Length: 116
Image 1 (tube, rainbow, N blue to C red):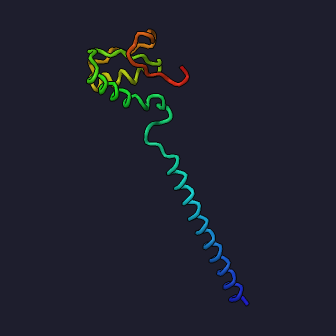
Image 2 (cartoon, one colour):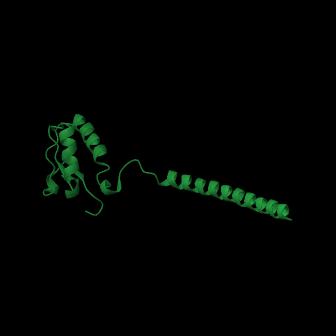
């Protein structure tokens, strides 16, 4: 009698473990799929506004080579000031004047946020 009870208990536990393994595998697949759709290698949440500054600076350098002007003035939103000055100093861009957020109508190019 005890042997029958023990064997039936082991069968039930084996089935529960098998079901748990399948559920764990399916959950892992959902986690991997969700991660692959939401992973972000372009910016961190705190610096999302500054994510495209490097691309904008590279584009300005390319336009500077084509342009006849020696210096480029850039109109920016105030939150881009630190990022632009960082790239001006690290890439030593002498043709880019210090950006201004005040005289927006007199600038050659603009880097603005959507809410401006």
